[in-house]
Image 1 (tube, rainbow, N blue to C red):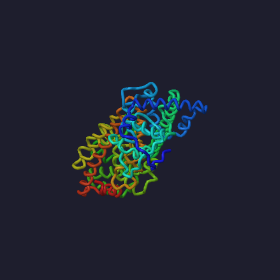
Image 2 (cartoon, rainbow, N blue to C red):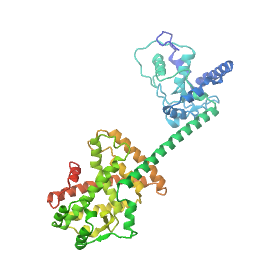
Image 3 (spheres, one colour):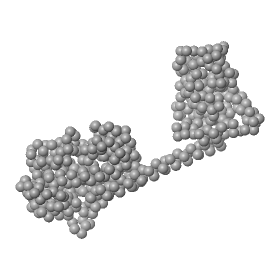
Image 4 (cartoon, rainbow, N blue to C red):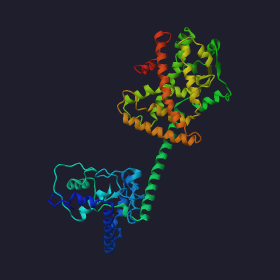
Length: 470
């Protein structure tokens, strides 16, 4: 190795320019090949190229560099090529690789790094001729335009970026060896991709199972009721009389565990307040289901408790309205776990602002249901809504974004597999995330307006969700 600090008569700038020329570089390169072959034959050790040693030590980070140099190309420094090296150089023009020393366009992988012809020749001459340069303390910045001005700093830069005479030069590897290396790297990359796809499929199954476990009503069940394929059709609520009848017939389904005293107080209120209260109890039940579902998302339970609360607070209504679409058609909405069906026209007939509450949800449901998602699709979509890293006040943003990224990738692969005839379904579904945020914002404003009128009080859990949200 060269002793850099030792004084020696420096090469002239003109001499360096001549030696840097591609033609001269190729001539020296051919002489070097002959010397390498001679050394190989005398040592009876063709393996001195260390191809296998390099291959066994290749890492994921090195893989791209290895693949880059497997495609032969001519030197970009000159249109003159030789049979010895022209077919083995890196096609840096198509890949736009820069020389690690001077930032000129690299011509190949030389002495362990991507380098241009000039710096390759400079390093080779310095090593072969054992040149020693006048020491420089200025730490010159080596660039294409000034690389010949300070040989000391240029050589120091070569060493700093990892150039070594012992490093493998892929341009000298036989074509058969290149193909073998490339095939092994391709197989490794394919195996890694297949492993990732298996992980994504496993995540999709896990979310689907949790979805079916924690949500009492799902799209498959709702379709049975909405298409009239059940032996007991839902009770239709289309006016005041049918509403009063439904309140008595479907009391348990409509109000869940609400006490009889609460129901008696509801009877004294006008119809709009009663319907609003029914909607609240249905929402609270769904929020509870969503909370249990969120715990099944891999990584969610490991988050800071405050982050879990924040994600649920900002995500449950977006998820709720996505799920609600499954219980809707153009004519109305399933209620009481499928026991009742309240018509769209009746809901629109309620006095303002109550009559304005459900119509935007019907409009969204029409567009959302046109995507023809099934429960396995919805499971991943709802999980992605909950684990959203841009919610305000989160402390573990990167961790949450990592969770969501896994879910999004699983959703993309799942949609491509389950809806092969609709390749644009994934971007269309992602657009619905923005639609849901707008829908929730409008809903929150309407709820606050109703709450101010004192026509109906807000459930404590929903009060906590809406507080400081919008």
